[in-house]
Image (cartoon, rainbow, N blue to C red; front, top):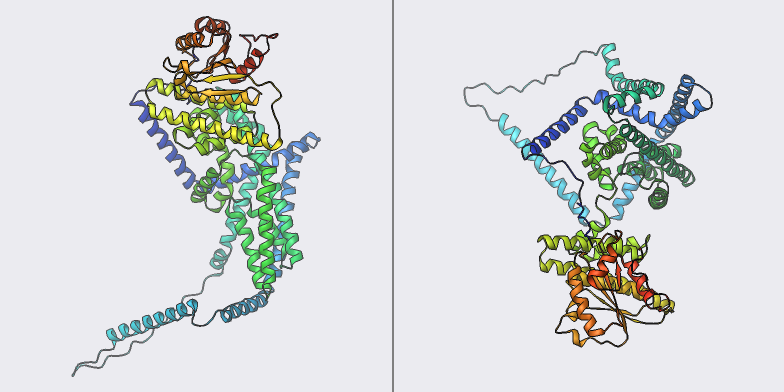
Length: 627
C-alpha cells in the first residue's frame, strides 16, 4: 500500500536566494516604517478621512435601503445626512441641558464631599497609620520650608563690613502686561472650539462625497490595487465592508442595550442627570477596555457627591457591576461573538498602537482599522502575517496543535483540547482526524531523525494517558447510568507491533471496540516477539488487530502475522490497521496479499465495524469496505 504523501505544516512559499530573503525583509520593514511615519505626520488629513470612511460604512446600508424604496441617489444621501445631524443636535441639546442642571448643584455637591471627608477622618482612630503618615509629611514640609528660608537669608542677609555702606533692600518690581486686543482674545477663546468644528465639517463633506460616489470609488480602488485580479479585490472589499458593518452594528446594539439600563437604573436610584450618564456609557463603550471604566467613573463620582450618605454610591456601583457582568457574559457572546475576527491580544495591541499615533480618536478607530488590516492579510499574500498575528482564526490544524502539546510535555492541555473537540464531534472522529494524524507527524519526525527514542516514548505515553483519561471519564458515565453492552463479549487483542506509537494507536482502537460492545484489550509490542509468543493465551481469542502508524510497514506486518498463525492457528482472524494510508482503489487487496491478513482498515471507525462484522459467521466482513 502506498504511503500518504507528507504534507507540509506551513504554506508553501517560493524559494529565494539567501541574499534576496534579507533584502525583501528589509524592504518590507522600510515600507512599514514609511507607512507608520505617514500615518503620524499626516494625521490632520487621515483622521477626518478615517472617520468619514467609518461613518460611510455605518450609513451606506440606510442610504441603499432608501434608494431601493425609490427615493433616488442624491435625496437618499441628503436624507441620511440630515437624519444624522438631527440626531446629533438632539443629543447635544440633551447633554447641554443635563450639564447645566448638574452645574447648578455644585455647591451642594461640595458640601456633601466635605461632610464625607470629615466623617471619614473621624472614623479613623487617632495615632493610626494614616495619622502618623500625615504628621510625618507635615513635619517634612516644615523642615524644608525652614531650610529654604535659612539658605535665602544666608545669601543676602550678611552683615556689612566696617566702612562699607549698608546693603539696600531690593525694591520689588511688578511687570504689567498690556491688555490683549479683542481680536486676539477672541482667537484664543474660540480657537480650541473651531478646530473640532472644522474637523467635523471636513468629515461631513467626505461622508457625503463617499455616499454619492460609492460605486465610482470602488471601481477606482479596484483599478488602482487589483485590476489584475478583480475577483480577489472584490472579495477583499466585500469582506472588509461586511466585517466592519457587522462590528459597528453589533457594537451599537450592545452599547444601547447597556446604556439604556444605565440611564433608567440611575434615574430610579436617584443619581442626578441620568440621561447624560446613559449617553456617556453608550458612547464610551466604543472604546475598547477602558471605555466602560470611563463611562462608570463619572456617575459613581457624582453619586458620592450628590448623597450625604453612602447608600447612593453603593447602589450605583452595584448597578454598573451587574450590567457589566450581564453584558460581558450574555449580550456580547450572544450578539457580538467573534464577528470582527480579532483576537483579544490584537484588540489591546491595536488600541495601544493607534492611540500612540492618533490619540483618543485613534483609540476609537483602533478596532475597525485593525479589521481592515486582517482582511488585507487574508487576501494579499505579502500581508498574510497580519492575519496570523492579529486574527482569531486557528493558525495551526488541530492535529498539529495536539502534536505540539505532546512535544511540549503538556498532556493536560492536550486533554483539554480533546474534551473541547468532543463537545462537537464524536470520539471516533477525534481519534481518526486529530490524534492519529498527530501520531503520524511523530512517526515522520522519528523516521527523519529529528525525534529521538526518548521523545517518541514521551509522546506516545502522553497520548496513551489522554486515551485512558477519556476511557475512565466515559466509564464513570456508563457506571452511573447502569448501562451494560448488549453484544456478546468476544476476545479481541489489539497490538502495536513496532514501537510505542503503534501501541498508542492500539489503545485507541481498543477503547472504541469496548464502546462498541466488544471485549477487547491491548497487549505490548513485546508480546508478539518470538521469546514471548508462546505465553499468549489462545482461549477465546477470535480477532487480532495489528496497529501501524506507518502505513509502509507491510513487510513487518507479514512477519508478525506469520508468527501469529503458527501460535493461534487459522481460526483467529487478523486485521491490519494501516491508519494513515490513503484508501486508493486496489490498495486494500494489495495489502491483504502482501501481509496475509483477512482484514485491512485505514481508519479506526472502519476497523471497529469490520471487527463487529467478523463476529457474525453468517455475515462475513467485507475486507475492502470503505470507511
